Length: 180
Image (cartoon, helix red, strand yellow):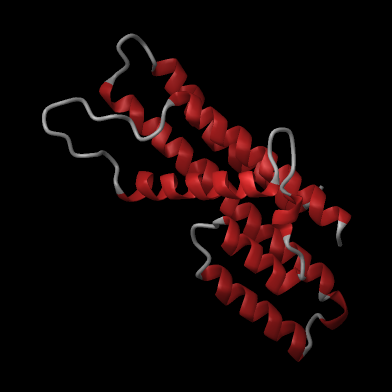
């Protein structure tokens, strides 16, 4: 298991704890402000994914550059990677694929296979969740005209995204270990 995956397992707990807090507050009817916990859980789950991707590519590059560590070439690649990671937001399937191909020459999306998921389905699901995270971050509550606004994310969806991201990290990490 990579160090990035170990770190991810701590990071994803924030999303799981937010879901647990939502569940503990979810009385009938739930408080009006409980919905914020689901949105925050979505943001935290996908932030854990983003951090995993960044940490895992750095880990892989460091392993590959051990022979040139401290040299001009090694320093150049590390600086270029750090600059790219500062601009690496919203790690969609395409952005993730490109990052790993550029720095490790591996298309990690080919390893996104597990129960009920093949690479194309996993890519589409990741892209949907990333888009929904953007909505949660930039559009906290939809405007409504007197009627109750639908929640951005339902409780079962948050549970699904957490499970999906955990499975995606496992598949990515396993694939990278078998191909490096």
